[in-house]
Structures are given as structure tokens and as C-alpha cells.
Image 1 (cartoon, rainbow, N blue to C red):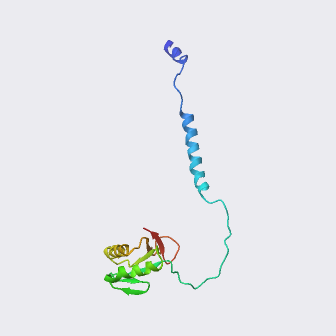
Image 2 (image 1 turned 90 degrees about the horizontal axis):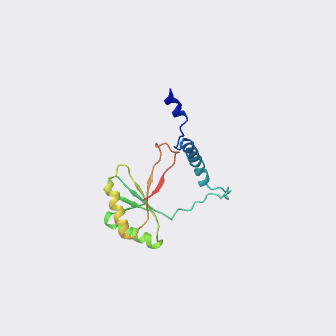
Length: 148
């Protein structure tokens, strides 16, 4: 019984970090919740409305790659050997135009890569792939552009 009495009177020289850990975790949770709210724009802007126009979008070069590998540029079927000259002619008119590639889902990957290489040699620098986002859980729409 004497030993039990001695241990009670002994001074504990260790620091208890449990309260400190609790405070740090609470602060971490607070920062994790508030940071996404701070990253959103804080100004509400009412943009002006405009009527629909029938002007064609000439800012992009639209390319269709069929499953057999043929390329249709701006609505005209182009032979593989003429891809570079056709892209070069379109880029000369308006430099830095992005090339939007709409490849058939059954087209071989090689066809699209070959087209991109030929377009790069012609001077194209911006490429995007158009995909159909139906069936992947997103709102229905025709195409989503993704920059490469």
C-alpha cells in the first residue's frame, strides 16, 4: 500500500497533446469547408441578353474523321495527301485557329494521330477533341470540347 501512495504524489512531467490535436483537427475541418466558398467569384453580374444570330462560327476549324480514316475539313472531304495544304490555307486566313476534331468512335486511333501530326506540320498549334456527353451522366448536349 505504500507504493500506491508514492505514485499519487509523483509529478507528471509529460505534455498532454490530446487537446492540441483536437484543436488542430477542428481548424483543419473549418479550413476545408470554407476554402471552396472563398474560391468562387463573389460578384453577381447580370449579363445583357442578345437575340440569336445566324452567323457561322468561323473561329474553329471543324474536322470530321470517319471510321475508314477519311478527313472532312469544313464540310469538304480531303484526301490524306492534301491535309497539310488545306490546313495551311485555313490557318493563313486566321492564325491560331483551334482545330476541333470530331472522330468517329469506331475510327482507329492511328487515323486521328496521323491527322494531328499532319495538321501540326501545316502550322496548327491548338487542338481539341469533341465528344458526345450523352450517356455519361451529364446533361444532354451535342458536344463537349476538351483541350489537349
